[in-house]
Length: 297
Image 1 (cartoon, helix red, strand yellow):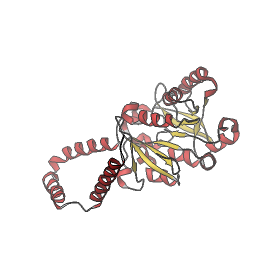
Image 2: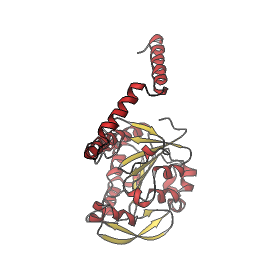
Image 3: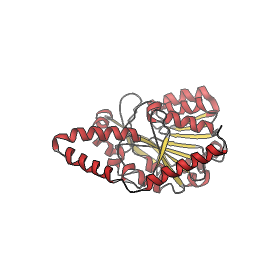
Image 4: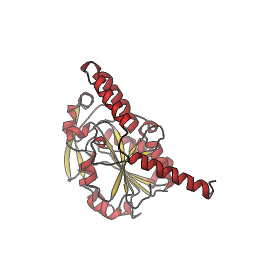
């Protein structure tokens, strides 16, 4: 346990580090930067620069797929569990892997939304296993009610998307060779039609993984966000958003009163990002969590 002198010493050390970080870059570092650019800004070395860039991006939280340990979601779920959540929403649940983790790690009720019949079969089995704690809706969520075409691949359609532009991505086009009409509903309308499912009065987690359709989900949920004030809103961002015409900045503008964190791999936690910065709007796979301003992170 720290005594008062240790506490003061730590506070003083932290103050010095903050002061150092706020100073202009020392001349030596500026010269090192210039020397690097001079030596490595050659066509023949752009492959090396790209490799270094990708490594740096992974350390920032990008392109770490495809386990909870690598994506940072496992550590986030542990953090969430400590808050003892009561109601969580899994939008774009697919076969229910994330929902199952929520059910296992917490005592929360989970509402899941998935339009593909093949994936929904898995959710039905999960619903039978967990009874009233898990309720699945066989619909997609968006900004308007109606039927829309969804492109999907074999099996449970892990890459299924309502955004046709995502087929400009090679691996998505190779997978999503089928198309079908699926029902789309606004989350606000689901809330008004099923108030008993939202009786807890507050949403602890709204998780959205819809392969580029995240902004449409939020546009269809202003009433839910205003009334039920989700404490955490997790969104996946990816290459899809480049062709779909959305960015982290646009998602953040739909969520005033929230601050944004990027999940880091290998249980490193998360770091706060400015959604308006270019570095936060990189179209590589990553998970971001918007935290309500009055919630301590």
